[in-house]
Length: 490
Image (cartoon, rainbow, N blue to C red; front, top):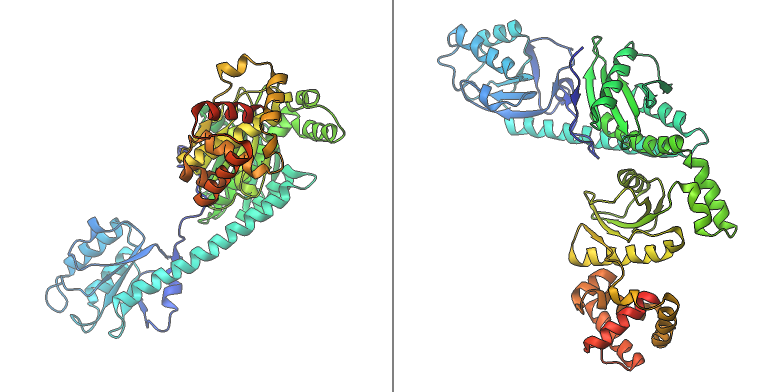
């Protein structure tokens, strides 16, 4: 068995799949014909490249259909040894096939080239005079694009089925069954001590090798690893969560381009599920929800969630609106299964010992560390931090905490003062929200408009209305300070 290697990242989309040479030969408009080399051996193409270099080796990446008109061959046929060396270099570079144009340099494919391709096992394609190399290359890219679209559709359907499986009464076995079916292999969940917890799919004969790869992954600490069994079965392992010890092992009888993306989604879902299994928090979270719905205080149910001090995170993706899979992935990355997906913001309740950090593709606002009784306050802090992060185009902004002035005023008196001062704005929450954002961004019209997703003229009109209702000069620093104090304690 080969030494296990670390797999680089977990792509959200699969790479472009290769296309069978047979699919290109089936294009009647190209009139291509294979005249040498092995037939029906599953040759696949990763691209097409035209070159008249006598030695194409330095210019090939591997897997290409190399197209040539034979300009570099002397005479009609040229020395047989030159053809043999030429084909040998293509094979050494990993070329998948050779396409030879019979016009305008040669009237027929040189016999010595046919013999060399047969000897080296390289498929040789005759390109008819009416067919340009550009048309052949375009056909290859069209087939690859078609294959990529089909693979993306397969990955999307697999993601949806995995998400549905995770919501079933038996989520872990259901996810494993769906994963095994979608990749045509076997999926196994290993526990912290390497014991098999659950499995799905037909045995592949590589069970011991897969278990060994999972144990090595658990001991080394990377997130993913890959290997190949002696039987040729492709193996992959995915660590679930941070330091929990659970590992997902997958054996692929025939690995497709999108299988890694599918297995990565399953790993994210199983991370959440195994997190609940390990801490017993699955049933505990349900109990906490019921108790809060029935009137329980946050501090009374927090013990069921496994923490005494918490931070609240508000996050917004940089691209499209977040979906369930993206929200779950963010929760897993932050180390918490307590995720709430809103229309455009994901909220995560994170235990204080797991300090949230920046996440690629997300803009994040983090509250101060609070006790359960202060969860609503922390939610507001995280929302303001996110607004500031969006306005300043910062990946992560943390709430700054209470100022020294706030510590001098009893909370009850501060709240009473805030209600009295801001009473003229009580009937219009939008005005108070705009005033808060405007003050937090030092009176910047543009950044406030970005934070609130409104036009800057709307911000100006609202702030002017606030000044009238409050009968206050908002250009006065003392007035701004008092209003900011009130907005934080209302």
